[in-house]
Image (cartoon, rainbow, N blue to C red; front, side, top):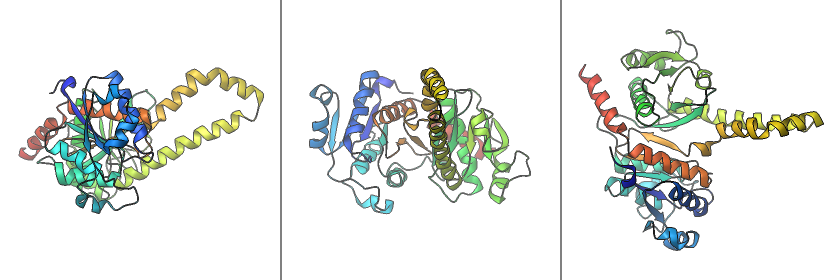
Length: 336
């Protein structure tokens, strides 16, 4: 385990939808709260134009002349060695950084992480994990949400091991409850993939069986395992529902004076807390689990707050023993 003060995080300054400004502002906010060592990767002139000298003195800059656009193919990333995300990930491979944060092309980030940093020895496929809110004011970890669209039962089993390790080592849950997403709680429910995965996952400590989509938000489970196609649809549907609820509430509030008064009284305590719970900026980004290093994939539309929290997530990940825990568990089960 590494002391957080000695953690070095590489930040891809160029990849987000809104350019370098919110990314660098997020870095500045992080430096105001936590003592760590940042390496900023991107165009030196642009970085220097957005960061006051006081903060420039606290960071190392690695110049990169290329940026992989959101509309470009992820398969081209391996040829773009001058791109900011390529150089940022290479820093982790070379042990010059303990982790990397990028709000750039997520497909390129995941592809390069697998290609350059590589997977842990006993992991067949990495998984992108995300935190989702539940009613007990804690979070449910859901994986995979987009790294592997076509999964095999073994992949889901490994996702369960990785999710359990993350819940223990990073989220601080001593005995996490791990569920397999299905169309019913009964052991017999599911499709061919989940039924076969269910058999394998019974060996995982904390496995409680099948869970339904609603369980993610009730607090009945700490880790939910699914394939990347289903998980990505779930994630985007949930984001859409949350936005729709807020919009509907605003429409109803504007229909009457008493509703407006009630909303005003509830604004600080109820509405502010609700928005905070469903705001992706509160979580920062999604860790790519199963990679032999720390990779945090942030939303392309990340604001400064999201980048700050993504950096905090990278620091917590890099200072934990999660990868060691994943390897030990997989080796133990492979030998049993």
